[in-house]
Length: 218
Image 1 (cartoon, rainbow, N blue to C red):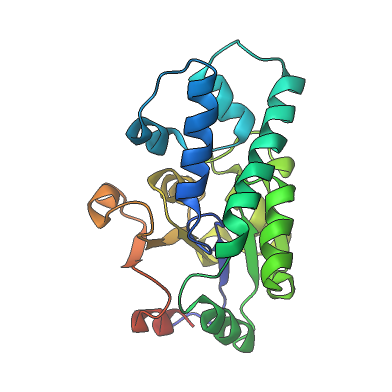
Image 2: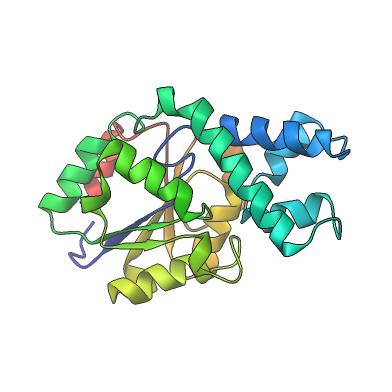
């Protein structure tokens, strides 16, 4: 890539770690215990955004904000208990982060996860030092596909949106990047390449970070 001025913005769940199945199964169990009556496939489609938004989408008007916050923390603690033995970066990501840092590319995390899960991931994998900025669910009003998450990352890094490349695993996340005026690299941990056909801001579609085409971004 010709321009030397750029920043990398990473979604976290499904993009840095392959954990989305754990979130989907946890929500599927919790919501069906509450009478939602949904399939795993429907849960996969609905598993995006902030936890309180998800609860309101699936069971509108059923819970107070305090109840949603309590359920969110309970769900994440269960998720962490189940996923902790499997906690690992996606293949090739550690090396890619090293190369980006060596190239002095500023990096941020822009995620719909609450800080409880961000800390679980960054500290569990000892990778916090790679990131100059973290924007979590606790920092925004509207989550993806709203562009707020990635816009805040760009502002905090003092980078123009056109100089930011977003790494995402979901169509809603790629839409968020597009609405923020940013290009995206798609990781197919949860969705197929065909599910991103409608987005013209996609630079690459990769299975993991061993893909040699990523070197062109450095």
